[in-house]
Image 1: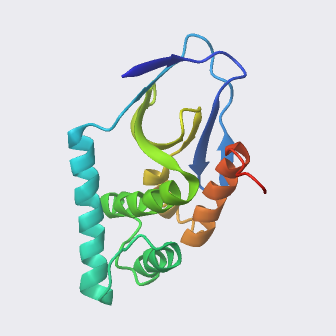
Image 2: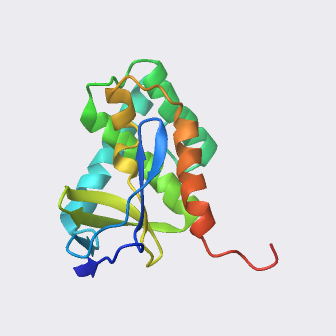
Length: 173
């Protein structure tokens, strides 16, 4: 586990909350954030999440999640629109966040980590070894739980837009 002590003005942690993207305020020197790799239990739990939401989609729509962005985003939206996953089903909504996170990781070159601070322990996506994070596990659930019906595709695009300025440009662009 790596311990990171942040100095004011150096935190660029992105939290996607209902209706807007917030840039976290600079963290004081005494606040600590721990970043670690996923444990075997974390990976196992996330695999179960993927399987559970995939099973629901296959049972009701005859198709599962295959890691293809447009198709998978549409399928996530169908789960919500059909009422198969409701706002009080936090576990299923967070499983949808896992699917969303995998798509973001693929597009943005991010990887799953454990992000732990005084607020708790969270699975997050990290861009390379920077202080740029996304928290996709709750991007859908937090919105649904407060009756915010932002389309899944828009949630996805806001996350992409939040990280894109911090990505290393490709040559010849």
